[in-house]
Length: 67
Image (cartoon, rainbow, N blue to C red):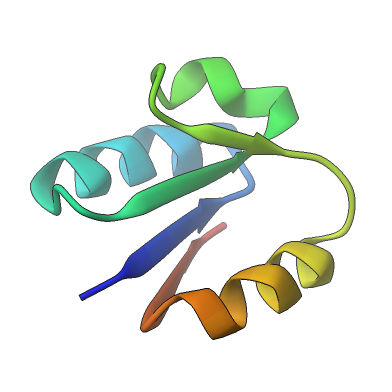
């Protein structure tokens, strides 16, 4: 299953990194400000959250939001 995890807070980035480690195929997107908290495999994003969701929606089977 293709899942994207999206984190927008510092603690959310840390938790999301742990979740991603437990689900090897999940793609982790973290707001740029907290990219360092989520590890080297996290994908930083800038801008509006709705723009990222709009991009990921057709590409994934599930979205997990951590605030």
